[in-house]
Image (cartoon, rainbow, N blue to C red; front, top):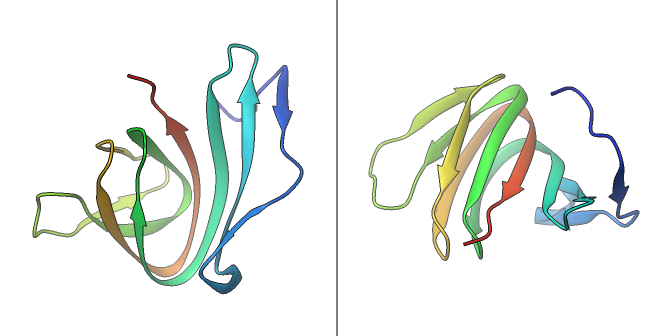
Length: 105
């Protein structure tokens, strides 16, 4: 899906890691939320509340998911799920353009 229709976009950005990671929250008519974000080169760790599905739109990221010692590379068109209340690590070598969907239990 290249666009979302009938949504509300929160104007203020979510800014992390001194501006190297930014996103905007998109709220759908049913109340569900996604963020559209961009990460510059760097190494990052994120904590989750609800489970998330990360969809790569552009660039690539290396990901170490909870419970794994292995790094896996995700590129445009790939996606992965992160469990609720967990932590995952990322390495971005160039950039990563992504969409994060928050899953309700």
